Structure formats: structure tokens, C-alpha cells
Length: 145
Image 1 (cartoon, rainbow, N blue to C red):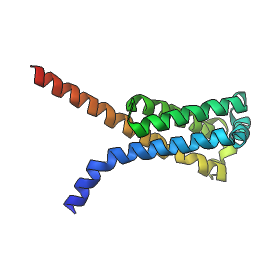
Image 2: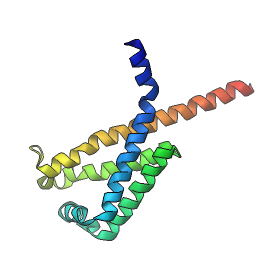
Image 3: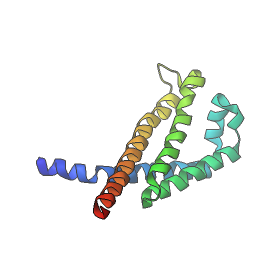
């Protein structure tokens, strides 16, 4: 069991970053292919954003974020961006509870609730990357001293 736990500890950060990137990439592609469901959701919750161009921009940001996470570039900053995207989605629970059915969730509310886990994943990816950068910086400082 110790080997299994050690292996899980070793790959957890990478798998979380890759899976978050994949989810963002996939959702972004769906937004570009068919923005209409998101436009409808926005019209019920954030009507000032309820137009296809806004959804295309959102989809493009998600695709870029997904690709950058998958290739491992600017990870903590991209995770912060994705956290902002998920937080934006979660505001629908507060500003339009009729859409989500809160506290007895509608199908839309259940769909949006996944962003709680995705936001937590983004926080974890961001924290792990920041800690990794800090550890490397400390190592360089010790090496030059």
C-alpha cells in the first residue's frame, strides 16, 4: 500500500493539472461550436453577457487556459484565470437562484455545481505550482550562497 500511496502522491499534481486543462479545453470547444445553451443560461442570470460574442470569448479563454495547463506554461496564473471563470459561473447560484433551484437543485443547478470541484482543483493546481516555484527559488538561493 505504501508504494501505491507514494505513486499517487507523485502523480497527483500532474494528473490534476492535465485533467483540469482537458476539462477547460473541452468546455471551451463546446462553447465555440454551440454558444446558444450558454447564451440562454446567461439571459436568465447575467443578461448583460447574453450574446454569442461573449460566449465565444469565454470559449476562447477556456481553450487557451486548457492548452496552457496541459503543456504546463504559466500554470499558477492560468489556474487563477480558471478560478475566476468558475467563480463567475458559481455567482449564478447567488444572483439567480431560480435558475439553479437552490437549495433543491434543478438539472441546471446540478450541472453548475461541478464548478465547486473545478474551482477547488484550480486552487490546488495554483498552490502546488506556486509552492514548486518557491522551492526552486529557495534551492537556487542555497546553491549560490
